[in-house]
Amino acid sequence: LLSIGYAACHWCHVMAHESFEDPAIARLMNHNFVCVKVDREERPDLDHIYQSALAAMGEHGGWPLTMFLTPDGAPFWGGTYIPPEPRWGRPGFPDLLRHIAKVFRDSPDKIVATTDQLASILRANIARASAAQTGRSSPDVDAKAEWLAGIMDTINGGFPGAPKFPMAMTLDFLWRGFLRTGDRTMETAVTVALD
Image 1: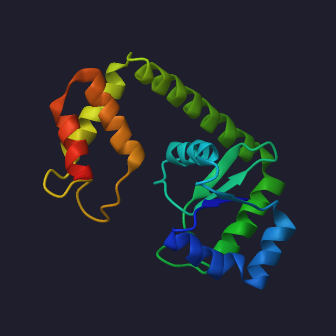
Image 2: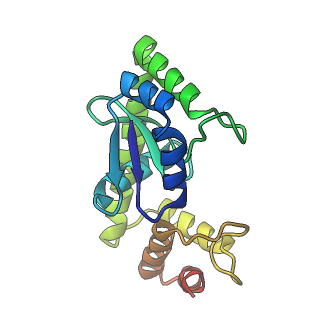
């Protein structure tokens, strides 16, 4: 069980207080998992890997990052803040811990299938990122950057709606798209968000 957070993260402190400091939840964690806590400020490389895995799972990134891994570090399930009891249509952390432990114990084939699929997605993403960094790009990558720039809030910056947290990876992606293509819409999306 990997938890990645940082000192200034409100929800990291909330989850630590509500779940990690709860004796019953701590017993469940320690009985079923090897628990690892990582500060994203100390290990941004690990945060990047597991945030990328979370995105490949179709989840929004953020902190605290809660990731379940195989013993060799391959991710198979992840999320961000998980409440201690069922809330907002989400399971409670103790229920999730029990479920993940049961699946890992009783259905290892499901875990292997998930880790293999995620590894394939991440390898493809790395190849695309590598091409983008060297100035080469696929039409697919540039089309995604163009689409993102087109939905950005041109008045208040960021994406429409709330919250307006600046998403550094998205802004970096758009900026690299601008540098590759010269598309001023991407440049404006970044500068308005930063302003």
